[in-house]
Image (cartoon, rainbow, N blue to C red):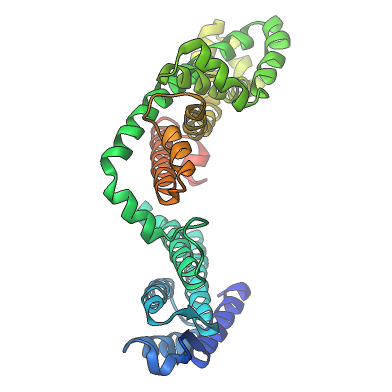
Length: 371
């Protein structure tokens, strides 16, 4: 066990002590204490957590399990009082630090002995994301945050689940612009990069112009594209093309220069033409750079399409829904659209990453440095 893990375990134990010793909350004029108002299993769980932490032998799976139990208790206790007190916040802090301890120990264990399945590594971001949602729910409800400022995740989920048809129509409208603009922007950027690599004139004259295009503000481009291509999804696809063009151009040009001089000299010795060298040496060497641009653009495309919908669109689309519902102070619906966009962007990025692993399986970044 590292010194950092030991220190984190001791601090988590101290927060567990304070959780048990301090009142959890206030109901009217009555103070609620942990030993009188906690659910039946809460007190034994906290005691076990305390004992396990001070022995400093809590394995990663156990600390992760205690973190989940602590978060569940924190959410369950929200209905037991009118407002949270110090003990409740230390209970929430204990669950958070247990999640941190789990992630730290599992990451160190995976560094010493890589897992046979990627699902084990996925436990770290999964628990971390769940811990963020628990803290979000607990803070917004326990501190009495007005829903118009920040609604709890449970409220957002209720609105999302009851408006699935509307969210689906908005997503399809935005996805058309994202996919078309992404394909065109990345394709044009890749083709121009090949041309720039082939021609020194274009390399000196076109790359600065590409840099100029990348600096154009999105809120200035979107209204112009709406005037040029109309209010439907083609104008949003045009904005996505502008946003995704430059990252693909720059990364591809950099990747084409990644192959070594020795490899190029060998291809020249074999009398290989420019195109043979390009397809058999330079493009394979540039593949990690190209996929890096594809992953960057997978998120930029969605952002660009949503923002472009603020400046003129039919009465569907994720950007339209966000701008119209925020005017009605329907914040839960806005967060529902944000959640759908975040999930869609993550899935898009994940698909590109899977394709990258299949295409560049030979690269050390994919193999994890193992031979």
